[in-house]
Length: 325
Image (tube, rainbow, N blue to C red; front, side, top):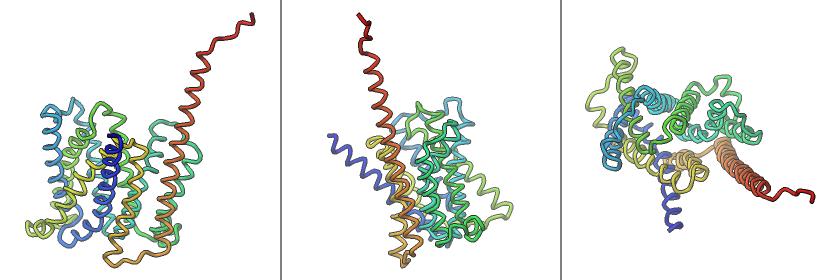
């Protein structure tokens, strides 16, 4: 039984990584007919409806309530779904899809920084070193072998927009544990996805009316139907359900490791499309994945060591105190 649950968790993590990694190339192909704003809007209108239907079926209509926390949910949904996706897809217009996926893979490292800011507790020096190494690997890829060019502006805004979007998703994700620990992952995701989709549609409509982005005709949506469906169902609903399964059965530490497969999938997809990885790209992805895996194992080792020390202390406290008699 335990083995089958573990296999299910591994399968969920792999599904999430494969569907998520392939999303970037699919989205980029959708830009032939739709701009990022209209493409993201169509994606999440479909995904939100599916999520809400799943929530109602699994937890009942009562789970659709906001519990008096509408504004906080709307804010988190907006920064998570609207902020992450709009920044990432606008950035995707100017950087390769595999580079965008590599930036997304730094989320575990960004989470360390977010928890530090929220808790005011400085992480271990080794953890910070792994975070710096992962970010250096991303800069190596985005700068095509020259990490300094990321700072000097040589790569443009695409990579920086993607990094800002990833940071927005980290804030959204950590907000679940901080403010909604009593909610299931499906309920938190479904409600915030619905509210975030409202923000995406409003932002898209306003931007289109002001002439900041192109108008989209019905024919543009039908021409991109398969990209929209892929991004809404496999890359959103199925990927996130796989993510939940991995985290629930394998634990957060082991489940988070599968995000390292996202850039690998993206690079494989681009290789099939004819892209030959460069030396800096290979070196950068190895640095990012190596740093994130090492950071994961380091954190688990420290947690096990601290737990052992606490247990030993408890055992010592329970021993009889010598009286000297």
